[in-house]
Length: 464
Image (cartoon, rainbow, N blue to C red; front, side):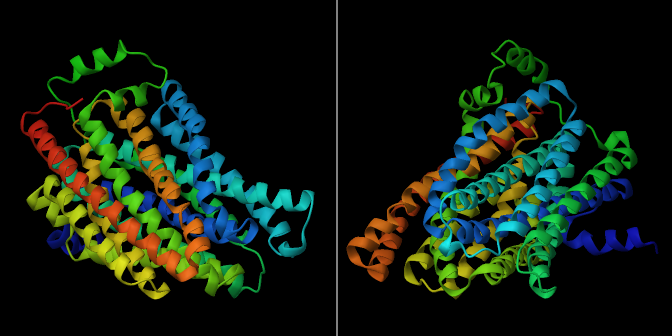
């Protein structure tokens, strides 16, 4: 028995039956995504730790607002690249740019992170703020563009029946990057006796370079018959109509002219809004218990925990919900689960509990909701998969975080008026009311999307 046939036998009860080359395809995709997710989760957990160290935890809501405005020109430049270059070249361009910036920020942290921040004044204090905000924007744009581009390519090279089983396998493999990246890479500086997180950034840059090599290998070794797109009988008509529409902000234009895309935008946004509210309480409590590289390591451990739990969900067969019961059921389960999370959030508010709540809610979102949402893009046109998806993934996620950040701005005034403990409790209660309203709307959107997707696949057509 070969190694590949053994792998096929192991994954069959959990993910379904794969043909030999089909299995190789999704294993390669999973490995690419593992490097993307590993580097992203590493810099993501560093993002909050370094920002709170260089700028301060109170500035986090404002950093989220700045990232939203920053991403507008970034996504417009990305759309222009899509018009000029192939999807493969864009992957290489973006990976190279982000790898270079990772090295630059690593050098910046090597110089600034060990300074006595409390006694810095004048231009040095401004420099720290610029580096802190710059790194925050760097991480937010990487997390918006690279996973979105990967999944756009995945949905553009996979048919629905194959995606049902394959996308969950890709996410499962990618969790290894999310598990080992944040905890191991973020703990390297402390283990080796360094006082800054520069080394972690250098390792992430190397991971980004590896993803480019694996991506090239994927297109070179995967048979062309397994790289075909889904085509609906009305696709030519839809694409002709889209070509007649304005190209400036084309992806955004398509988003706001189709109910199906707006509904996808909503189900991407809702867990992020709720998660951002949870996140502020968690980060505030974490910064009270830890600082410096110890805070970075603790948040790295949190990032690994998210991916460990997501991996456990996936190997226990959570993907079978989508494969057997359908995309609609998977989408519908998410608001129900998050409704329970909101109840837990308002009931208990310790660091340990918030650690578990945040990790498990994000994990279920990645393991169940993520693969289901990616399948929704399959019965759409090329422009929707690449251009509109980029807008939805970017502003669905980051715009939602901005909504959560605006809501979180009310925490400081409440604490100033009622005291730290009572103010936090009042904010949590208000957040629960807000969250339950979101859950109700979320249920409606999930039902609509499930019905539309099933009808499109059954009738062999594209939705838009």
